[in-house]
Image (cartoon, rainbow, N blue to C red):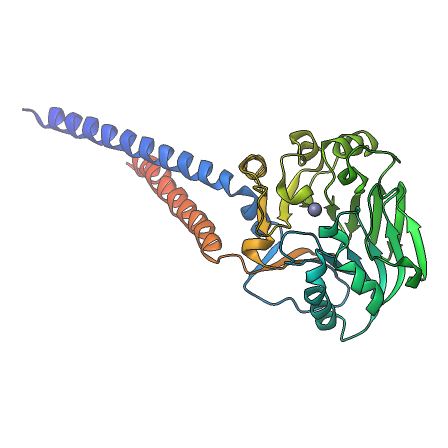
Length: 346
Ligand SMILES: [Zn+2]
C-alpha cells in the first residue's frame, strides 16, 4: 500500500470521527437547550436580576415594596408593605388563622397596631374569617369591601373602621412608585367568588396580580378591560388553584413568570393537576404556601427578590444545567473551530 493511500485512509477516518463528534455535540447541545427551556423562568431570573433566597428570612430594606403571601392553610392572606411605609392586608384566612396574621404583623411592623388598608376580596370565610379579630384589635384606617358581598360577613363589624370603601373599577390606592388598580366593573354576579376584584399592583417595574377566588367569568371581563400588553407578572393564583379559574386566555394576557398558590390541606383537590400543568407549560415558577410556607417577594428598582422555604435541590438542578451547557459549548468549540484551524495551518 502506497504512502498516499495510507494518508487518504487516515484522512477518511479522521473525517468520519470528526463528523461523529460534531453530531454528538449537536445532539447534546440540543438536549441541553431543551432542558434549559423547561427551566427558562428561573434561568431568566438568574440572568435578569431576580434574586432567589431559599430558606432565608426576609429583612426589610429601604425603598422596596414587599408582598408577603402568608401560609394560612386553606385560605388567603397577603400583607403588603409599601416603600412609603404603609401596611396593606388583602384577605385574612379562616377565623382560626387570626393568631398567625397577628404574629406576622407584629414581627414585620415592630408591634405597631396601625393598618392603612384592609381589602376583602369576597364574602367567604376563608377570606374574611381572620379579619373579624383584625378589625377589632388593630386600628384599620380604610377597609375596601367587595362591591356587593352577595353573602354574609358573619361577625365582621366594620363600624370600628375609619373609612369603608366599596371596591370599584380604578386606581384605589396609589403612592410613591406603586399603584393598586382594581378591575371590578360589574355589580351583580351569580357566583359570590366573582365579586373578587382582579387587583393589579404595579411596583417599580414589577406587576403583581391578586385575584381572590375570581372565576373565568371575572377573568374574561378583565381581559376585555385591561388594554395593552402585560409582558411579565407575578400571579396569586385564583381560587386556590381550582379549575374554575386561571384560564389559558387569562395566563396569555398576564404572562406570569412566578405564580403563588395560597392553599392548605383540602378536600377539593386544590390545586388541580390541570392548573399546575397549565402554569408549568408557560414556564412559570410555582410556589405553594402548603409546601413552600410563607413566600415573600420584594420589588425594587433593580427587580425582585424571592424568599421562601422552597427545596434548595431545585436551584441546584438548574445551576447544573447551566454548568453542563457551558461545558458542552466549550467542547463543541474545541471540536469544530480547533480542527478547522489546525487544517488551515497545514
Ligand atoms: Zn377561597
